[in-house]
Image (cartoon, rainbow, N blue to C red):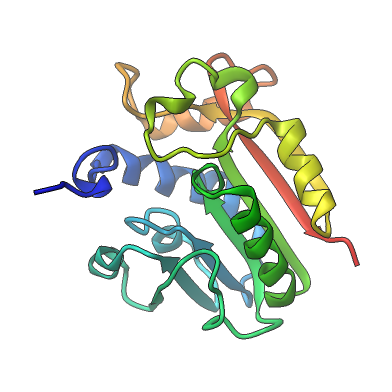
Length: 212
């Protein structure tokens, strides 16, 4: 019997919950309007969306098991990232995707971006965290489900080619993974976020908004 991705490469890890609760509190929460709607695409175990505070929270993932991990008040949608039909047009103030777009082909990502432009409000933004191939090329394909290669430069260009403008780009935002010997403590995460130069930074952060 074949084991699923969530049973092999992406099993539940409590350290991931600690990481994202700290990131939300120390970094992402300040970017989100309290009266806003947040959509997480590829929500997985809900580590990000569960820790955000706002008027409405929506988690979308093709994995049905996601529903078991969502906090009360979070709306779960089991659907592909290329099918956002259940998200109302012009309703999302903050769209978030972590470690997702490298799992999509370029035509599928273009389809996702086209739909996202219709879902965002006039103040809406798309916020992306994912491996940066420029710095993570040795480990990039350790995940057997990665199908597309993106660096901070190529993903920024792809976003612009698909109707977005870049608001912010941090080539080195976070280390690549929690699967290491490095400890995961809130104080260390907060300190790392404040560093002007980030050693071991292999994940990028890109924030974008519709160009028109």
